[in-house]
Amino acid sequence: MTCSGTTPPQSCAPTFASSSAAMRLTICLDPRTSSGVHNRIHGAEDHMRSGTLAREAKISVDTLRHYERIGLLATPPRTLAGYREYPAQALQRVILIQRALCLGFSLSELRDILRERDKGGAPCHRVAVLARAKLAQLDAQMRELQTLRRRMVRILRSWQARLAKTPKGRQARLLEKLQEGAPRDRSLFPHKFRQRKQPRRRQWKSD
Image 1: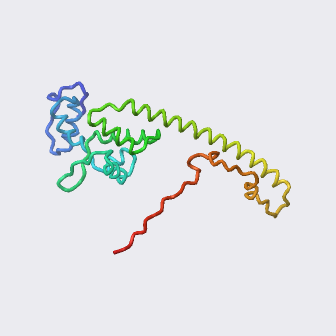
Image 2: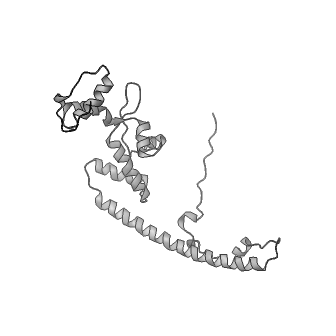
Image 3: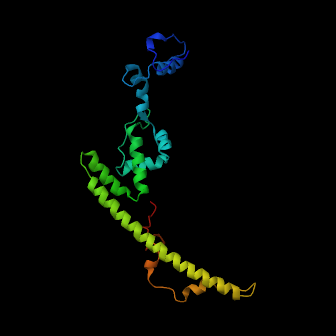
């Protein structure tokens, strides 16, 4: 039996031997979000476990754990079996975090912003200031990329001319040509291409 959303539940409510079948029909019969039947059935959907949340947000479960550890995501309650049960709002929170990360916000920045917002604060102006700073950084990186591109075009032209003069089977020594007139200004390279001093790793001794 099928029923439209406008049909009153009392007009078509047969008895089912299968409780699952009755539940599916009840959802069809009683679609109003303010109804008690709707709220009882959909109450279970107000929480989700780690795997479901990670899958819906398209991240890993380890990422969820990391968000919890650094305070971006509240630690959810656990079931009697020990499973985490996240509230439905956690999905929107994770999606917000992922989108902000794509714009260049750091995890620490988001942690401070969301923590202030959760306490009732309004860090909106701070968010705008950070976004403007990130836009300025992006503009600077784009200028550096354009400078690097122009240099690479010149190098490729030089290499092509050298290759044309080099007999087949002989080494053209193209990389050695980079040492001739190489700029010492490392700002010609984008930030991601700059060589950064790596921190020394601490050597842990086994017990």
